[in-house]
Length: 467
Image 1 (cartoon, rainbow, N blue to C red):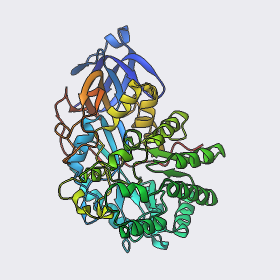
Image 2 (image 1 turned 90 degrees about the vertical axis):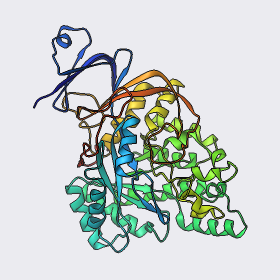
Image 3 (image 1 turned 120 degrees about the vertical axis):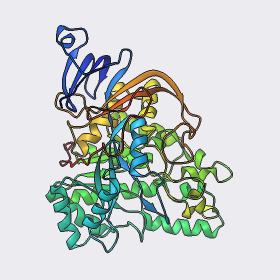
Image 4 (image 1 turned 45 degrees about the vertical axis):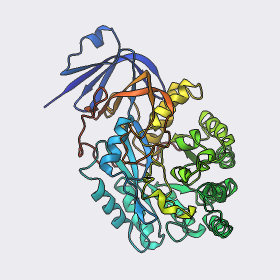
C-alpha cells in the first residue's frame, strides 16, 4: 500500500539551505520539495497533511555516539534500546549510532551479535553500530575488514581505562593501519589513562574522594597529550581519525593544528561540555556525581573555545555520549570513592533543543545547527544523503520544530529512563512538535505514537567527509 504525506507551510532548514517549502513524502522517502503556494505544491494530493505554518521543518537528528545498555563499573546504563530510542525521538533525533563492545578475549563478531540482539525489535527509530575494539590481535584485524563490508565502518579505541578497554600505542597503530586499508574510521577516546590512574590513586590516598576530584585528576593536559599522540599515530598509519567527546581547549588546539596541516582529523564535542562545567561536579552532598563522565566537565572558560571550534569547523559534530546511570543505586556506588562512580550522563533527548538554544543566543546559525547535529554526523559515518537532510530520495526522517515554544528541562518531564536531568531547571526556547521516521509518525503533536520495532538496523558506507 502506497502512502503519501504532505508537510505544508514550514521553513525547511538543511545544512545548506533555508526555504519556505512544502515537502512531499511517498512510501517513507522524501519525494519532492516545492515552494509553498506554488502550483506545483498545490497540485499535490496526500493521505495526510501536516500543517507546519510558523514552524521549522528539519531533518531528524543523527546522534552518532550513544551507549544503550552499556555494562560499566559493575552496572549497566539505565536506558534500554527501547527507552533510549523513544527518548531520542522525543528530542528530535531519528537515528542513533551505538557502540557494540568487544570484550578482551572475545571476537568482534561476538560483541556485534550481542548488540544486535539487544537492539533488534526494540527501537523506535533507526540505528547503526560502531565497534569498540578492546583486544587488537591478528584475528581482530581480519574481522575489521569483514565488519566494514557489512556496514560497521567505524572502530573505537581507548587510550583510557587500563584493564578494561585500553589499547597501547602499538595496538592503536595496528588498528589504524588496518583502517587505512579497509576504509574504516578510527574513533579515539583520547585521555592518557595510564597517567590518570596514578593521579586517581594519589588523590584517594590523600582522602580526596568527592566527585569533583574526578575532574581534577583527569587533567586537560592529559586529554591534549593523548589527542596529539592519536593524531601522530594516525598520520604515521595514513588513516583518518575522529576524536570523540572533546572537552578541553588544549585538545581543540591540537585538532586545529592538525587540520591546518591538511590531515583528515575530526573532532566531536557534546552538549555537556558546551553547557555544564566543573561547577556542577563540585555540587555539594554528592550531587556532583550526577555529572561524572569522561572526558570530564571542564572549567567554564573552556566552553568559549569549544563554541569557536564549532564555528570554525575544527569541531564538526555534536553527539551526546548518552550513557545514563541513575543517581540512586548507580551513581551512589561511588560514595566515598569518586573512582567508583559510573561514568556517563543522560542527554539523547536534550541535544537538539540545547543546540537550538545556541541558535537563539547567537552562538551558531540555524544551518550550522542542522550541520553539526544532522548532516555532518550522517556524512562522517556513511549515511548521507539517506539520513541527515531533506532532499528527494532521502529517508523521510523529518521533525516539525516549534522555534517559539518555551520549555524547562526536568527529570519530571523527560522520557529517558534515568532519575535526574543534567539540565534540571534549564529554560530553553524551541521544542519538537512532530517527528516522522521513514514517513511514520513517531511523535504526533507532542504525543508518542511510535512503536518498538519500527526502527531498523542501518548499515553504513565508509566516511564521506574526507578531505
